[in-house]
Every structure is written in structure tokens, then in C-alpha cells.
Length: 324
Image (cartoon, rainbow, N blue to C red; front, side):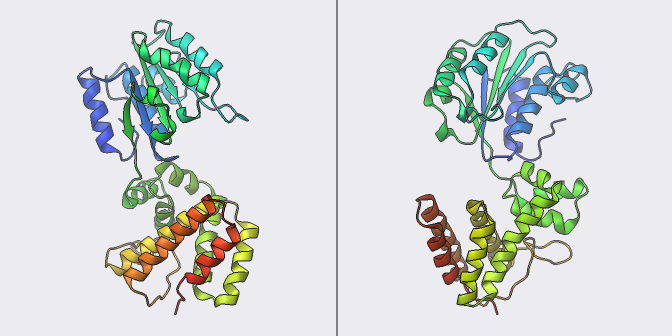
């Protein structure tokens, strides 16, 4: 049983390729952080090594249990070391030594490189040699945040699959299955932006959830405040919020939810509360709401272009509509 939730199209391709013995020697999963790349990589690893039901991990045999514990002798994991900003060439050299050996316990070896976009240039060049002449009985699985951050030489030798954000309803359903209350699951699913891994981690971290809700509350306070008070709120924001980009994410998602409600598309849990919380009366048209989202995107681009953060946020705050 594959444990990945969602991404069915990619799962179906991988299962079909495994059944037909047509899987490439190198697979690359790309997508945002915590969207499911690591879980899918583990599923594929277990499917390759499982001794009970080939191509479909049972998670009960010694092979699958070894993969789940990351202690399988035929699994080699490369990841960013603590305190480092890139994956070193020595780590790739160790991988090459491992793949040169015959499988010890399973029918083949599997190597996984997490965040391959962080490979040092020398490490990428060394890895290229392995991809050009892959040893028999070896599969290499890489993950990366984007193909744009990967050398074209590596990309051309991998089967590339991009994982996108999951539907909000799917994330909420999975959280509820794990015992998260309906209102909390609705909020976290909306705040996750389709990243199942983030939603699950946040459901187990009350402090993270409170930080996320505080950013949404700040938007509501801004909508209800007059111009002078909005400047005070920006002062508070600059003192307390370290991740401005995340603030833009949540504010955009709140307005997206507002648009869905205006369009008559259900964006509520069964208790009829908005998924992002804090119902607000706003007498604006959908076109005006779209304009607000565009202004949020514009403010984000200003900040990324090193425009003064205070100026960008104050300009955005002054152009937000006022709640009734």
C-alpha cells in the first residue's frame, strides 16, 4: 500500500512502470517543500525492495520495515548535513561507493538524494558520471524544489515528475482521518496551500498553528482599522513577524477563500465557518477582491526586489478595503 496521499497520476505511472519493468534508472520529484516528495520517494523505494508483493509495498516484510526505519542495507540516503548549506562532493562519492556494491539483502539498491538542487557544483558533476553509466541493479531517486535550480545535464538523465499542491478538501479529509478536529483541519488545509506534509506537521505543533492564525488575525484587524490604526498594525507586524513571504501566502489565500464564498463555492466546514476563520463583512465586488490579491502579489515582488519592507506593507495596508 502506497502511503502517499494524492498525486494519483504520478503514482499510477510509477506502478505501471514497475509492473512493466520500465522504470528509469533515475527519477526526480520536484515541487514545493512538504508537498509529498519525500513520502513518494519512500513509497517507491519500498515498492522496489518489497519481498512480499512486488511493486506495491506491504510495510510488513523485513525489507519494507527497513525502508520505513531508514535502516535498510540497500538504501543509501543523501541529505543536507546539519549546519551546511549545500550537499558536499564527499557525500556523492560515498553514494558512488555504495552503488558499486552488489545488493546485500534485496534484489537491488536504491539511493535517495533529498534536495538535490542543493548539490555543490562539483558534487553535481560527480553525480553526472553515475547517471551516465548507471550500475546494474540500482535506482536513483532525487527530490528538488524546482527543475530551474537543477543543472540541465542532470535533468536530461532523469524521469522528471512535478508534484503540485493538493486540493484543500483532500488535505482536510486526511487531517480529520488523523483525528484533527474539523475547524482545525479546515484552517490548516487552507493554510497549507496544498502541502500535505506541512499540514500534518502543523497539526502536531500548537505554536506553529498559533503563529499562522495570528497572521490571519492581523489581516482582519487591518481590514477593520482606520488608516492611522493600520500604520500602527504595520509597526507591530514588523516587530513580530519574521517570515513576510508567509504572511503574503496566507493573506492571498484568505482573499481566495473570500472570492470562493462570493462565487457561491463552498469554502466552509460543516459548522458553516469559513475555513480561514474570522468572518468579515465586506461590501466589495469580486473584481475588487481580485485587485487586492494582485496588490498582495505586487507587494511581495517589491519585497523580493529589496524595496523597503515597511513601505511595501504600508502601501498594501492603505489600499485594503475597509470592513463594515
